[in-house]
Length: 498
Image (tube, rainbow, N blue to C red; front, side, top):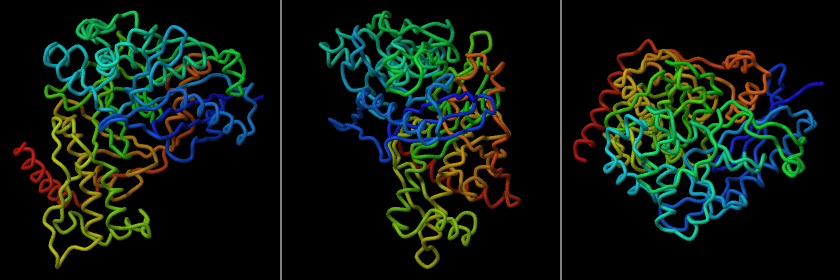
């Protein structure tokens, strides 16, 4: 009788789940709930909240949906893995009751709290110990609650990340991981411990920090109540949890120093694994404990985020192409235009402040429009190249930090499905781009098999080769370099004026 691993990916737009055959490591099925995007509450400008109990309700629905559509008996599920939206804050009292809506990753209310801590703790200490500024992350969000909602704060028994909350609902145990604490900017890499100096600065009692478990470990067993709700057997262990970007890297088989994962969704991410704590002196990147980080064998994920990525290209499709044109049709039109779009250039940073640009918000620009030359195909190409150039600019920052690579692994979705986009990035970075057929939920499911002993080593969790495409450098390197260098001059001129 077959046994299965199940993974859940708790996003801010939907909950996804995947079943993997434990023996063959093949994906049996995937499901999503709800079909439309979950609502994000914005009580004030810049706020973003969700009800954690809604996540739990949807976990139950998507689990039942997945078991039904695959015709798998929930009694045959062997272990559970969790991936989740990073940097959120969930607060519960001693009875494990939620005290307020979760302040999620895209909420910006605690920016100034983090900026003040960065200055007063000391920039060098923050960067060398935390690999980050306190920023608008979980610790700063908790300080905001302390300052602005004291009646709520005094009832807090534990604070958690979104994945910790789902783990608690499944097992009744409140635990977190080193990786999770690092994404909340509460892990001291030099002392291999909770960052007590951050807690002290924010006047946060260490007792509010959950028990710390290894990323791959038995983190609790499903309770009778949760088992009935999910449709699986009581006692099933929860054995893996990680934030969405480290987990995405795991899913893409990026676990070793020198390997890089990238995503090109609404925002873009380049995630490089290194074997020592690295930080950027002007804090253009974030460093987190990767899923396989250990004090004696360090694995740090250096994350560079590009806000102006898929959001820009979607805007071009909606506002210029319109509903009657598909992305595939846009790609066909792009191929009628030369590299560099006849010198039409788009700066894509219209989705807020960019950390990789030292938190400047320079906005988006369309430069050098010539009415007798440029048409819609030029606009599509310039827009797509603008995002690709932003990725290249980000990889250059990683190279400045001493991070070198020859391969970038990406999922088979979003911007990297475009040959034009992927070839542009490959040509200008000198990297081969490998497209892997996987998802975060699949990665979480596979990750869950390590702690149970189903797999002997991390490399064993992967199935047969899932590489579905490869993009190499173009022969016409000079044209790409000329287009990129012109675009880069536009960007640098904008930055000089900030």
